[in-house]
Amino acid sequence: MRIEPLALQAAAAIAAVAAGTLFAAIQFIHPPDELASVTTPAWALVAALTLAMAILGLAGVSGAYLRQARRSGVPGLAGFLLLAAFYLLTAMVTFVEALVLPVTAEEAPGFTIDFIALAGGGEVTGDLGALTALGPLSGVLFMGGGVLFGVGLWRSRVQPRWVAVLIGLGALVQLATSFLPHELHRFAALPFALALIGLGLIWRPRRGRTDSSPRSEAAVV
Image (cartoon, rainbow, N blue to C red; front, side):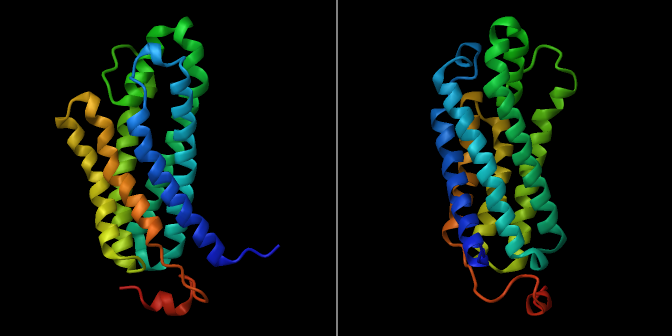
């Protein structure tokens, strides 16, 4: 079976739109970050949607990067790698939230509460060892990856530059969580979610040329 490049580009665009849509929707339906939520159907649903979002997000940014790899330069590559690591880390944390925390909720409630706080940006009171680095690491990967990926999009000129600006600013909005009440932290994700949707919707697939062609390489500024 022959897979056409345009079909892969279309699939990546759809993945970006789906990831952005899920990223936004999750913020509105996520149950409270508390011990009682861990064993509820709502918690399981959000965990499943978050895992799907991470997989689709990885597919979407991978397609976008490969579409402009030579034009986006080192910033684009660095941004892609950071965002890819963010989505992989999100998938791993979500795995724990979905399958481990419901078990530890009764047997180790202290650990469960601290892990929920860690993943949700709350205050950790116990000793989670090296796990305490997950929260800051996730923030660095997301913000750094978003900004650098936006710079790569700007340099590539493959997509409209307003998308590049929206992605970069969408990632930086996370800095505002330091000044917002904890219950509003999740809504700082909405600008980046909208940026992903915009990236997918205005995707410009081009037939007969790839970013690895000599003509594309010569177009690097």
